[in-house]
Amino acid sequence: MIPENRYSIKQLVPGLKLSLLKDWLGMLRIGNAMVIGFAATTGYVVSGGHHVCEALLLALSATLIGCYGNVVNDILDIEIDRINKPWRPLPSGRISLSSAKAGASLLLMAGIVLSLILPPVCPVIAVIASLLLYTYSWRVKKTGFPGNLVIALLSFMVVEYGGLAGPDPTRSLVPGLYAFLIILGREIYKGVEDIEGDRRHEVRTIAVSLGIKPAVIIGTMLLFTVVAISPFPYFYMGMNIAYPLLAILGVDLPIIIASIRIISNPVKYAWTTTRILKVPLFMGLLAFFLGSLPYL
Image 1 (tube, rainbow, N blue to C red):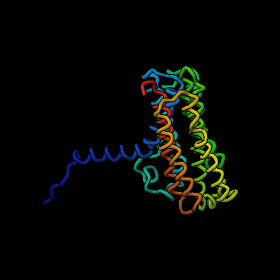
Image 2: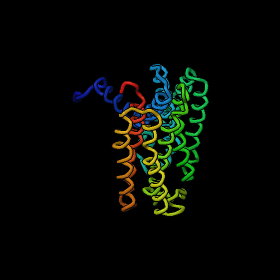
Image 3: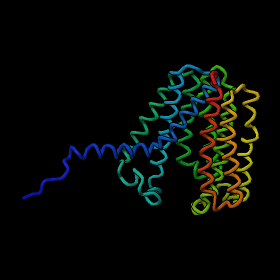
Image 4: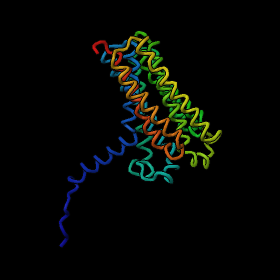
């Protein structure tokens, strides 16, 4: 007698679908992509924008293009990931390469189409950012410091993507500068974290080209520039009290703590330092977003 199966196919299918959804969300890096959408919304609010539908369109468009960039990165890195990270959805085969390419195309088209509903400058920025994302994953990230600059520039651009849709785009330059400096400083610190692997693959980061100490000094100078200019928005841009509270506790303090750690022992603390520095980017955006609201 053939034993009765414990689970039917119908019972297994929901589990399979849930697993596939989890793999796709992981490849999209949905959390990071949503921060990109929030950055666009922050630029819009800081520049005086107040239309909820426009803010949502900016956030969704930026998020979709960010997801596109993450999928393209995994597609172009599939051979490297087969060796270094075989558990990821693409190299493991849980998501096929053809499905990933189709998904990337749909994400890009959706993000660009949504940008067409926004002010005319937004589609231009969306197309340029998409090209930079592809070029970064294809070639530029292997160049070291130029790749760091491209990532920092993209962070600046996403804030301006929202800012240019608002009535006073010049106000979004300050949070854009915040994002640029924090991301560039963190990327330079990551070069310290990844120095051995970068040396083997001839990735010319500052840590590889000039040494660990110069990389730490340059990264710290960039990050402390953020701390130095942090009072400016409150005193000269009319931010409410939410801005200094969040900027001091969520931006300045983590930057100071992270920098002290990596200065004390670059090799030992590089990994934890770059993780701590995820906090100032989001908290800086939140500080500008809430600080620009008229009812706080």
